[in-house]
Amino acid sequence: MAATKPLKGLELVDCARANAKQGAETAAELCGYGADLNTFKQSVQQACESMGVEFHELSDLITDQQRMLSLGEGEIVAPDSPSDL
Image (cartoon, rainbow, N blue to C red; front, side, top):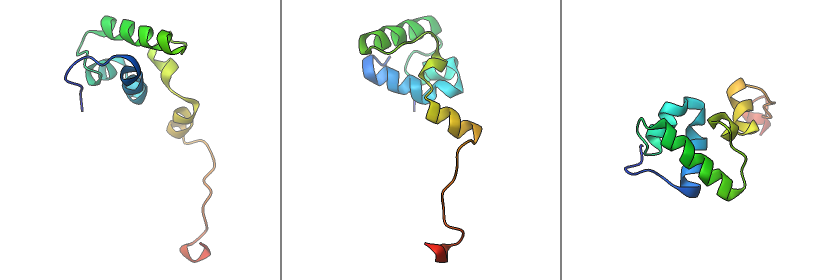
């Protein structure tokens, strides 16, 4: 659900991080910035700087865990059957 007004601070960083894999256009729209990508990027950069988070581009916000999930990497640990629970 898109924000009705531009998000700021931690809310903006959280929203941008959650939508970073979908691209800057989608993230900007969902964070309340519509098609204004320049203002979105500047706002995210300011919010990250105030939090001490390094930010150069939107992909910087994607965590290693998110990358592994999207690549299908990692190991699944589960019983072989329901009776093995």
